[in-house]
Length: 130
Figure (cartoon, rainbow, N blue to C red):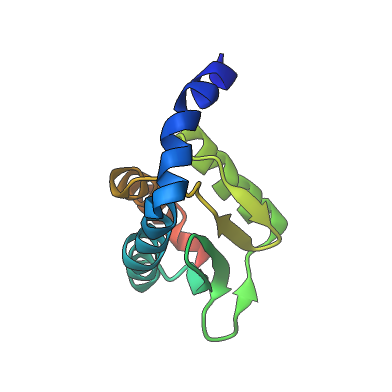
């Protein structure tokens, strides 16, 4: 099962923590890959009212109007969450926010895959933004 994989990776993870590369990777991915990618999505999709956060702890605030900062409804958020799940991305949704909090071991390629899923799903829901 999945637990065995985690335990098999423990020596590699321990070495990465000890030599500092674990934290360097988290900082690099969060600040240089994830955040710029989310900001690019916000420029492209009017449904994203704000990107906020630090490092690997980010959030997207979804709105129907950027000017009025009108939050999306619970039903709209549920539909978006369902579409993200169907596309293979497990979303942590609170009110009108999607918290984007990947593991510290995530790679740039995995972030790119996640951003592509967000992009495709947000395009499907573009009509929600006025």
